[in-house]
Length: 296
Image (tube, rainbow, N blue to C red):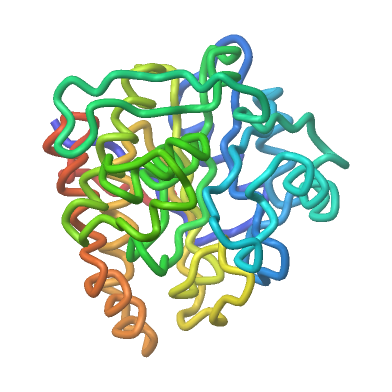
């Protein structure tokens, strides 16, 4: 049976809530809302006022984890104090409760018995405080993963600093200062991301939902302090209970568009073997690449 992916060309805070309502799910208990806080200097990330009606609807807490940067010049989100200061500067704390899930250790270690690359994932321990998760992703390109969407939010986004190091090094090290010397290949890295993503999906099971926003379509991620400006016009927003299907649908919408920036965007995706993340996640059984796109 094909997964349902709901799509709208309207990109507004109110339309996000309408999309979520189409899913027919009520996320129970304490809801973790995974967002990308946006690196200091980044011009493309989606601001908290855009997400506010959706977060308010589920009564959620904004969750993030620290980055694994080994070089302080890359960004400021690699330790809690600076990360929280940036969350304040970007307006997140103005509207929401914010939880840096790996602010205090020890990390949780979740086994991945059927992982392609990783045998375990390391996540911020506070994730266990939540009963369900809403993943709000800004779909765009990425310097290493090719693209960023729901699967990256699950994988890199929910991993602690040590977990991020493990993913980037294909399990070779959990030391963020060494991982960049041992970076995974463009086959290992997407497979490691799929492994990590699977551990989050398997933890929350049926209590997780996904929304991808195809706006500000740069080839660079919101983690880039200096990001390239968008190369494509905005496309729309999607919602699904399947992280594989929603990312596949986004890729297909780019490929099937007539936008003159399409080739530049897809060159970034393909040069990093980005679609292999989707392939690997499907093989791990956390979703399907076969979907029904339902426009609303």
